[in-house]
Structures are given as structure tokens and as C-alpha cells.
Length: 158
Image (cartoon, rainbow, N blue to C red):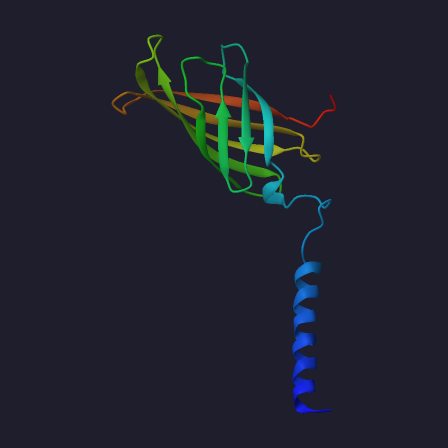
């Protein structure tokens, strides 16, 4: 065999090994998500603060660590923040939103820090957190501890 054919055969073999390794190592589309991504998706959350009625909210966790929150109040903006996995079914995060009065004037911000645990089927979550309220000048005016229960929003047929 000529030297060029041997080099060509080695190159083809090397490329084949790399291709098989790359394709074979990729997770299938039906495989369970990696632990850090099991929270990814949208959820209906019910927030509970002692002495107040339960409040619903909508949240979304993205695969790149972004957290989005929509609350039930007309006096707040949507919330923006980040989250990270802390274990197989646990996570922690921080998000902020803006507050305004009835006239629409900016009155301050809220910073919320939370931790949550997913159930074994990744469709329910429970957690707790602390929300710090700041006035328009950035001075903290109060803190509130809360608990939250979440239910994953699933695809449903029309």
C-alpha cells in the first residue's frame, strides 16, 4: 500500500472515531434532562406570607440560568433574575422587580432570594425565600419571609 493511501486510511479512521464519539455521546431527545435543567420551563407558583391570602404568580426558568417572574400586582414590573442548581433536585435564585404607586411613579424595588426543591417527577416544587423591599433611594424598608409551591405548566391538547 502506498504511503498516501495509509495516511488517507488513518485520516478517515480518525475522523470516523471522532464523529462516532461526538454523535454517540450526545443525549437523545427523549432522555431525561440533566439535573441542572430539570427545573427549566414555566410554572404556576402560589406564594404564602403569614397573615396574607395566597398569591399566584408565573415564573420561567431558562436553561442558561435566567429567571423571569410575573406577579399578580398592577403596582410592580415583571421580575428578572438568575438561578442555579445546588443539587440533583434543588436550586437557588435571586430576582428583582420594580414597584410603583397608583399614579405610576417609581417607589422602589424588591429583591427576592429563594431556594426550592423539585419532587421526584419534576412537576411540583416547594421552596422558601426572603423578599427585601427598598424605597426609591435604595434604603431597605422591610423584609418578608415566604414559602412557595409550584406546579409545572404542561402542554395540553386543545
